[in-house]
Length: 154
View 1 (spheres, rainbow, N blue to C red):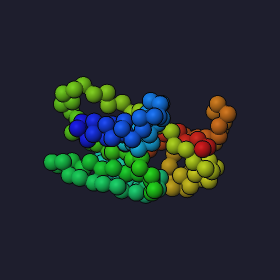
View 2 (view 1 turned 60 degrees about the vertical axis):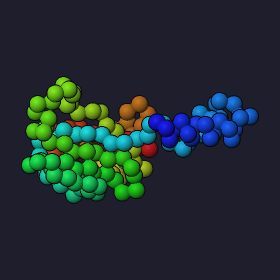
View 3 (view 1 turned 45 degrees about the horizontal axis):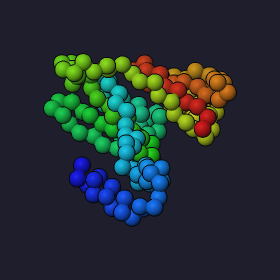
View 4 (view 1 turned 180 degrees about the vertical axis):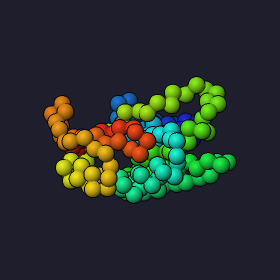
């Protein structure tokens, strides 16, 4: 908190003639506010999910840690900060905060929908046919545990 207050004071002195709007934009650009992180997927079999996302979808293993007898891993696409954190459902069996462990709705953007569709199908991923939804070409695919993900033209 002290670091943010110190930055704020510095910016305030440096830009005393700027309006508050420009200060706000400067804070946004420099990332002082929230940024993208990752999405947690609660899974039955961590290793099978790591294999699916890396070998069949084309993500890379970003991080993998052992937590007791469980494996928690992050997988993501090369050159992107976004990642899925794969957390075993077994770790959440007590769930003291009553977290909703349902799958979130997730959509990936790609440059070439047809090419991505063909790539996933050739890797034996279950996919629905490419169609148009709200003016965008796209399709959906299922992971190895039956969760569905959307893919749309960027």
